[in-house]
Length: 150
Ligand code: SF4
Ligand code: SF4
Ligand SMILES: [Zn+2]
Image 1 (cartoon, helix red, strand yellow):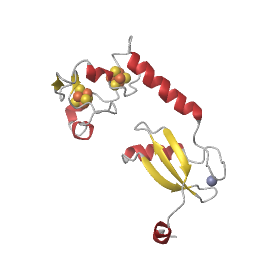
Image 2: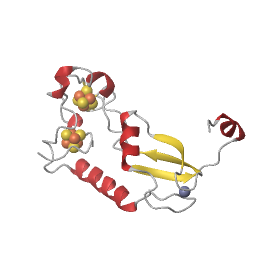
Image 3: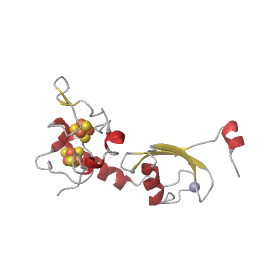
């Protein structure tokens, strides 16, 4: 089966066991504007969710799915761009892959973190899939600096 890239297309065609069809939106009422399931945190706690909707298990709607193709293209482009370069010291891949995996695990999509090579802070944003989507230099405020636990 093709990989699920979280494009949300299937939830505009029919609903899963937990979904409610919205006639006005012509999609599941729980499909958020970012194309993600707004009920994810609740549904995932249910044991039966592994069978339906079986989040991430694979895509059975990949044929002629333009929405999925578009999402795939965006993810590939972002990965190719390689934003994982410290904007201060220019160290390539200064953030480890584990770091992004952990952010996804704790539902974090942004953060202020110090570069382990030069110690300067950066502000980053990642997609829900853990792909770095934005990075810029960050200067700690005096208050933030005072709270640092060295
Ligand atoms: S990739 Fe397939 S299964 Fe995943 S959200 Fe899109 S249409 Fe649904
Ligand atoms: S409840 Fe979530 S996974 Fe199920 S159809 Fe609606 S948006 Fe999709
Ligand atoms: Zn650095």
